Length: 256
Image (cartoon, rainbow, N blue to C red; front, side, top):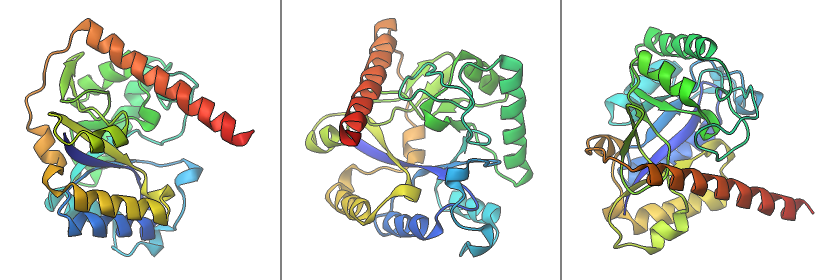
């Protein structure tokens, strides 16, 4: 399978040392990822470095330089603060900034986020939901605001649903790496803020081993989306819920 990369949690006060370390790997191996920019981050877990410590000057101008260099920008929620414990349409997590909230409130928040990006000269039709969690009201609001693409779902190629194009993420990276000859496309999700040395080493090895399989996210966006059956959508929902359950069982086992 062809592999693209997405980076979550891009903010003015993220862990800049880790971001720049991962960016150096991307530059070395000519990887042009999707980055999820939080318009008005209020998540205390993402307040790591003060904006004044950023090695790139103005954050928003830097994001635009990344776009000019071939990186793709997505709006990553609005505040990145979880408001509910709803799982939504893609049940990988039991927490959400949007799922379970009324349409009008979601529309107003998403509109504010879009306007913040626009005020800084950033225009995108791609959305990245925090915790992968959204519901039909989220989709309805996004469509009204001009969004046409979502980075989420499971599968081996982009697909259409609810008038949006979904670009699937990897269900299990190990299986993708082992099945070198399998046809299709997927996206590996990266949270640089929480990466450790071993994670950087793993990705450096991955990039070196998969040079001929890596594609830019912009290349992924050029693919014609496929239609998917109702069974395919229910299968995706089941896969997400099973993964959620397995992760929780693993976490409880580790804690005990």
